[in-house]
Length: 250
Image 1 (cartoon, rainbow, N blue to C red):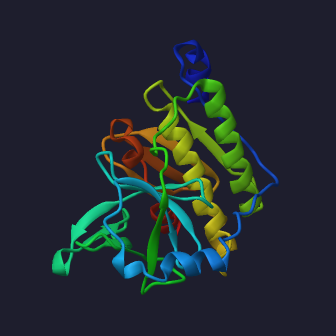
Image 2 (cartoon, rainbow, N blue to C red; image 1 turned 90 degrees about the horizontal axis):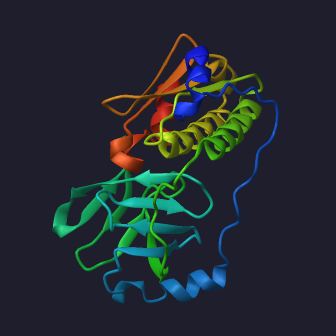
């Protein structure tokens, strides 16, 4: 595959095989308690929020909710991953937004209130509107930018696994940005798996992460290759979430 990729580099195709040894950054800290207290004192009277805005949860986690595109998108400020959500009807006219594993992420009431769900707060926590935000979109991505993004993602994944992991992809102008994003998301899944008690056994099974275009989004692990299928025409919805990739590794 690498031979074909090198020969067609002038046609914009690119392939990367990257070995890594160390490096990791930590997420930012949560917001202060006084801000939370002021925001949530009268949360029951909040009006419906705008389709694109920044919010903060009771525990101080900031995120952007973008409902201006084909699929609702959510991004926490302490993570590079954008979550693609699927709205589902709920009792009393509410809407539950779920991730690609069918797990609830956000609940919207017909009156405009929001409840955020997480591993730490499975029963949910209230959300308050903070202000305006820029839309969540894939950036334009050239070969050099793609290479840098893949390098960073591989670097972090390899450090977490404590062994060489090969990141490999074949990109076109239509798929470069999505492949770069999928590489970051895959590294987040590997990092999360590295924090499990059975991390060594799980990560020893991963020797390569391969990104390919296809007709249906998927993530699978076989023969040491974590294969991630992307669908560029679907935008951010055209790649699996870190939760789905982690499930494939388990």
